[in-house]
Image (cartoon, rainbow, N blue to C red; front, side, top):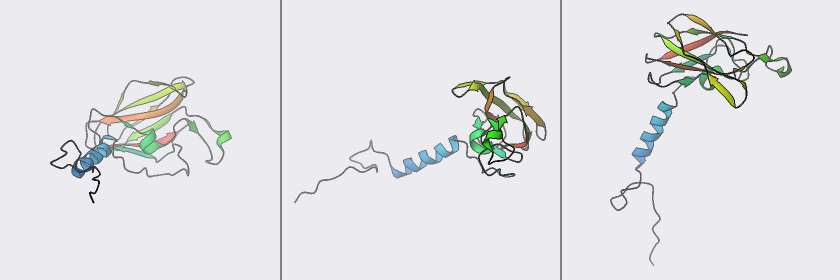
Length: 163
């Protein structure tokens, strides 16, 4: 009996257009790097995904790429809640004070807007190592994200306070 040959994902001499396992692994590794391999946030864990003092955002991306600190470290930046289990008492975030805890200058920008789906990116703000800055959304806007970029090998921001 003749067996039916099924195509495989591994490259062969008969099918050079197929992708090898090594190529798949390389692509997967590069994708992780491109997503901004971020270390888990540390400091105060508020029990939910809301921003709080002590949360950290770290980036090892190249200087021309920015990392979303809302996604990789800080958590939800839109609201400040006095108690994690009391969502009705939450108010819009009016300011996040952050410290550049890394060894090199970083550039941070605010992503904000009046409602979901409408977002604007503010100008970049330069923050020297060891310095603290207060970042705010536009008047009446929600604070959706803070982006981080810089020239050093490791960029680190730590939340000092939220209000």
